[in-house]
Each structure stands twice: as structure tokens, then as C-alpha cells.
Image (tube, rainbow over all chains, first blue to last red; front, side, top):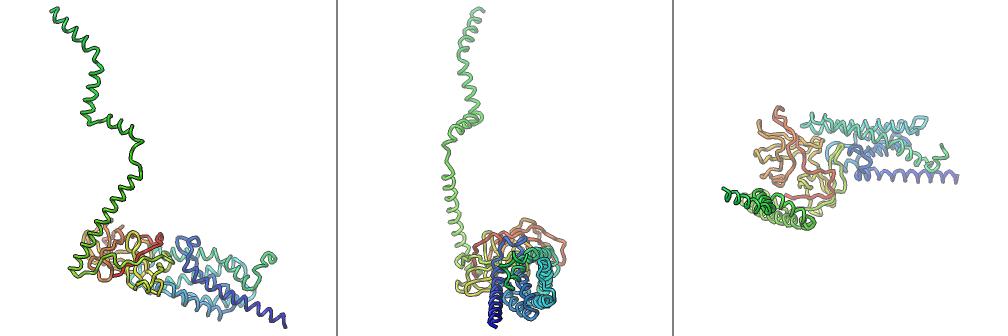
Length: 182
Length: 247
């Protein structure tokens, strides 16, 4: 019993710690380090955080986390397109995938899911740009949008296998026993 | 006859020893004729180690800059006085607020800057943001200590512009690329690449006569009206401090 409550406490402690790392998402979005960009376009930090969280916590937690993230991130960008329709379906979908056995933990799978998620989020943002900027509808089908879409996809796909793996291990409490696992 | 020969012979002998003098005269005549060629060059070569150094050149350049700044201030005062007489928006530097760039997104879905000055410093929505080179964008939203700038390149950015050479009005539209689109309001604006684009001198929304960029390309066959692309003068990727100019 005592051991069980200790484990529960430890789990909750890790969960709170993981949740606290969500604060890094708006921070790095604002900071936008130039050495982590491709031609000035940075990764989709929201997807990089949301993917391990939703996989570990399930669809409802993923949806709520995506909602909270999109509210924060929408406050950090210009009026117009919103993260809300891009992130909330992703949070739900990642959570559904996480429920299925076997658990998703391979770097390639995480990278692929992050790329798919970023492609979805990028498409929704692009679509919103087209809807909001009706006067420049034709102009938005230009190299800029495609460049942003692809650059974000590549840099997110490159970072996801490392970052998402580390975060999942962190969540499971096995981040310091990687060498033993392999 | 014999006397004549003697005279000629003695004359030749008398000049034979003086050829260096003749050579010198010819050389000096050459110097005179060429306005000092060779002579001045030699002088220049000899005194090269004693030429005024870079410090003196900088001192002179600083003097020129001070003079030009003084002339600029006088001209601005004169301009301001004339604008007051015509009841136009002021273009003085009195409303400038310096602000550090604390976050930068010059590429991507949103193209914006976040500044480290806000309502408390007097920054308001709609104020113009200027960097080295010219106009960068317009304040989109403000918090007590920060302000968000919509860059001229951002999709959705629209400002009225003025091409002084042809006295033509246009609209600068941000399209996400580094070169915003210029839409003209006249059918045949008679413009050419290289024309300077600035804010209108009679604008009530923006400070007047702020340089924005130069026309890079023109599409005079575009419908319904001609369009162009503008190369901006100020580069948001490389600017750490900007100035917010109030109307």
C-alpha cells in the first residue's frame, strides 16, 4: 500500500513536471532561436509538446492541452489565423493513437507522427490565411506559403525523434535509465 | 668666308659645354607645358609618408556629418513650420520612442516583431515603427510593457504609399514574401524600377514622408490595374532596436 502511494505520488510529480514544460512552448515560440530554423522558419513547438503529452495521457487530456496551448499561442501572434482548429483535433487524434497497443515510443514513429501533425496544422493555418485575406487570395498561393509549410515540416520532423522520445521517457520516469534500456 | 667659318666653329664650341643647361630648359618647359607632370608626381611620392592619416580624414568626415545634420534639422524645422501652416500631420522627430526588439518572426505564418515598450511608454495601436532604412511596420496591439508590430511583409498588411517622382498614390500589400506588392490607383502610372516609395506627405494615418523602399519590378499589363514589387529599405531580420513614431 505504502509502495503504491509512493508510486502514485511519483507519477503525479512527473505529470506536474511534464505539464510545467508546456510553459516552454510559448517561451521558445517567442524566443524563436535562429539556429533552430530553416530559412527563418522554426519548428512547430506546439506539436512537439502535444505529441508526447497526448500519447501518454489520452484523447481528452490531449484535447484540453491543445485547447490551452492554442489559447496561449493565439495571444502571441497577430490577429487572423488561429491555432485552435489546428491543434485541438491533433490533441484528440494523438491521444487516440496512444491508447492503442503497442505503445508508440520508437523515434521513427514519433518523427512521422510529428511530421503528419505539423502538415495538418500548417494546412489549417494556410487555409485560414486564404480565408482571412480574401483580397490577396491569389497572392497567397505563392512560394512563401509553400516554403513556410515545407520548412516547418522538415525542422519539426528532424527535432521530433529526439525531443519527443526524451519527453516520453521523462513522463515514464525512465529518462535516466536510457542506457539500461538499450 | 674664313671669318664666317670661324664664327660658326667658335659658336658650336661655346654651346658644346652647355648641353646640360639646354636639357634642363627643355625638361622645365615640359613640366610647364604639362602643368607639373612628373614634378608633382615626384613630390607626391616623396611626401607620401607624411600624408594626413585616417584620423584626419575621419575628423573631416565627422565635420561634414555635423554640418549635414545641422542642415537637416534646419530643413525639418522649416518643413514643420510649412506643414503647420497647411494644417498637415506633423513629421517631426519629437514623438519618437526607442524600443528593443524582444521577439522576432520575420518568416513563417505570422510576420511580426515584439517590442520592449508598450502603453506605459506611450506606444499606441497604429503607430509607425521605423528601423534603419525606413518604415518597418505598424503597431498592431499593445500591452502595458510590450507592443506587437505587423511587418509590412505580413499577409494582411495594407498601407497607402506615395511615389514622389510621379506624384502617384498606391497601396502596399503584404503577401508574406520579402517584397510586398504595390497596387496602383492609376491606369498608367508612368513609373520605373528604382523609384522611391514613401508614405504620403498628406497622410492622416501615417507619419508623412517616411521612406519605405524602391520599386523593383513593374507589371503594367496586370488587370484591373498595374502592380509592382517593392524592395524594402529596412530589414527586420537584422534590427535589434527600432523607433516608434507617433502621429
